[in-house]
Length: 205
Image (cartoon, rainbow, N blue to C red; front, side, top):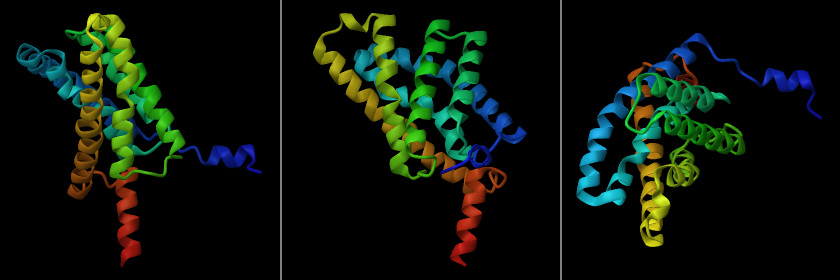
């Protein structure tokens, strides 16, 4: 049976670099969200809620990318928490309440899924699973906050499916691609993803 001291040793604390990275990604997301709001309006005029749903995955990338790089329990909670706080301070077209609720939905789901995966699976499938899983809870909250419940069942169903696909591709898969590109650049040597790559390279040789 695992003792309390053994359990504590498995908890790896965040480094200053980890925290800086999480803050940087959250800040970058705030800037990205500002510009995405214009794209969102354009898509809405072209295809309504279904069209705007195609890009929802991009809004979630920053927290999942932080998790993919840092690989420590609580990464999503901190990154999405910082992101939500920044959104509240700088403001956005969706409002403070939406920023807070969205961040809470994302972090709860991400932390739960990685816990179930025991923080050991970081392949494309795992990232896509988390990206898609973060969508439904926030969609339900958003539906009640923004009046989506007035839409027909068909529109709601199609919108949900499109958003989940967007989460899988534009959040999960994109996170894997971006993370691997950054890792290969040599910029992430001091993070968990970089150490894992170095260890794998050593084992290969």
